[in-house]
Amino acid sequence: MIPSPASSSSGSRKKRMKRGPKARPGTKWRTAAQERVYGRRLLEALRATAALGPRAVKEAADSALAFTARGRSRWSRAILLSPRRKARLLLRTGSKIRRGRRRARAAEAGGRLRGRLRVLRRLVPGCRKLSAGSLLEEAADYVAALEMQVKAMRALADALSAAPAAAAAAEPGSRGGV
Amino acid sequence: MGPARSSGVGSGNSGAYATEIAESLRFEEEIHSIVHPGLDSPPAAGGSFTALLGLPANQAVELLHETGPSEAPGSAAAPSPTGELWRLRLGEHAAGPLHLPLGCSPTFPSNVALVERAARFSVFAAEDSPALSSGGGPSPRLKAEPPDSDSPPTLLIPAEKTQRLAKRKECEKSKAKGPAKKSKSAEENTAAAAKETAAENTDGEKLPYVHVRARRGQATDSHSLAERARREKINARMKLLQELVPGCSKITGTALVLDEIINHVQSLQRQVEFLSMRLAAVNPRIDFGGLDSFLSAECGPLATANGRGGVALDPALWSSHPVTANGARWLPQPQIRHVDVWPTQQSSTAWTRDGAAHPHALLNPGAALFGYDPASSVSLNSNQLKTEL
Picture 1 (tube, rainbow over the protein chains, first blue to last red):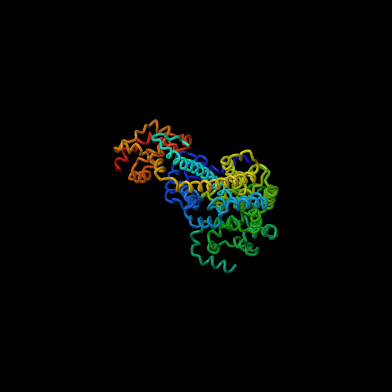
Picture 2: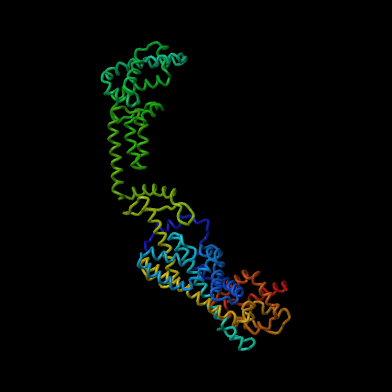
């Protein structure tokens, strides 16, 4: 990596007064408060989409995540503003993951940086035409948000799957954590 | 000669300038005697002067002659007073090379017209254009020179020409070499930075210009500067991503790091899909009373406060086993509605308070879903919910 007085100077001198103090995505998404906010929204969304299928659940989860981002990042806006198109795409391309893997390998052969950047563009929603710099920024935010989403969903799934079991135990007042 | 005279006569202000004209006559006689030998070879001295003035040789000589023979104030009326002064200065310039040593710049009265003419003079123009094209540095120097150079006499001109050429050659050489010195790179930087201010509205950062300093031994044309700035920005973002994705800090090389990032994103998305399948599977099974248990963790004791009294829920119990599904079951259906209403109104405040007070979010993975400790929030919200009810 190039060490840099220049990069720090260029980064600091770029006037970011419009954005205000910019929190790094690693710290922004990892707070417990954020996770709770998201969890609540996720729960509401789940109740709304009661048993419409896993894809609806995923979409609801993603929308909840994008909403929690408050529209400050490009990917969140892309998710919120065009869920229907994404839904159709999801329905069509059920095996989206496999295709992504193949493309990753092909892109490796294609060109080192360019191919991978292309793959990344496809992965992060709403970043098809971004420059490399903004793409990386969005990707950082997206990765942090995804991590939080996975954590929250896992906890919720565990709790929900455990709750009926505990309830079935029929012991008032005592309920062990799963 | 004729038209000049007639125009001169036409101006009726000759009387006002009588004193000046008298002076000019006296001087002109002296100068004329000096100039005449010089005029014998017009191309030598007169040629340079006429070129200086941008006039053809004949007219300049005529003008010089005009000042000589004319003695009557009326007839000596110049086309304009400035014309008189101008001819006077012509004489001075003629006297210059003969009397003044080289390198001395006498303080001549600065005549605007003369300065302009000198600036337009072809020799100077020829010197100016290549100098201007060679860059910003020399041009201010050169621009300063023509106003100075109109006054020094003709013999100085060739000397100055060589001087200016030498300076220009220096600059061109150094620029042709590319940038060895930091001082040069500093100049280039300012030029390049200026260009960048105009041209570069950097990517999405929304704000105009970037100050970039070229480092020693690196190319300093604007293209490479801009590319370097872009590359450094990209590298900074890559560093951020490296910290975010686990296991990337050891990897060197942008391509491999990108690979890792892509794999990480794909694995996360896969996990989300699997978890969503799990949730979808779990959803229909659960009775939403169980769900309410999480939500009603805050309003369980509210049930007691409302007079249910059935469940004596200990705050200690709450902290260790945050939610009792059975306790939730005892809540009647209407409670659910309140549960629905309540979070939307107060979720943000409650959660932030909880977040501040109890950061053990994930220690109890079960129903302490998001680590809230209902004991603290219960007291806060009980009154509020009472008002709702």
